[in-house]
Image (cartoon, rainbow, N blue to C red; front, side, top):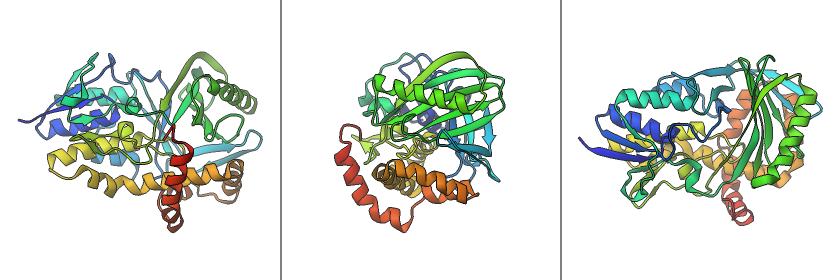
Length: 355
């Protein structure tokens, strides 16, 4: 029975491990922290459900992953510039809220439980050299951060809500969000090309706007935050090692949704080993079009700056099928295909310290 070694017990690493073990491989996963999800603090994140016509939960099940974690479907979402609030209820979930971290009902702990049940050997507090690994799944630690998140998690008696705030004083080149489900909430500012203490003033403005617009009733506050990365040219295989998730640079460069990419890339890494197929080719068949579209979308957003947010708000007023429009925006068109080479070059030159 062949042995496979994986560095990193995140979403992509555990997805790969589960699939490989079920196919009969002996799998060892080496994680530098003392538990799965330790880089998070109970954050709420959106498992996006608009970039593919297949529901993300069905897609996850098709990759041999059980839904043994808490996930709350959201069909109703709000969009605001800090003044006007637009609401829309879609016919299908726009995303599923999942908890990240060491909480028992988190996505990370759910995958950990499945991995252990399938026979995966997880070695915590293990800082192994990557030279002996077959799959590298170490998240953003492998590359330079592209953006950062600053915020809080809290308890609340408020109704469930999902809000996206587009305001240049509340976020640098991205957005802020407020998420509450079942008495538990997160409020964060997402900032591209910005790290460190500079993000604090953006979150301060986010908090000011959100608490003024919504009756949130915040209690038991804990600070949360972190970084993420995206590569304009993804790292598929290097020195014979397969790279997955953020370690490979698989991330949505427009708004930073990366969990779907992580799970898919872990599954495809396992598939490439089990079926002796080319990993890069598998990724290109399933993910590359959307990854390239996100580069074009980011270039457009940066090019038009504040006018881009204004356009989105006007679009939201005139169109009621928000999820369908998001699907079209996240998948390639003649226009996004045409500008992709220029967009990639422009971003590479302009943000060479980040991308």
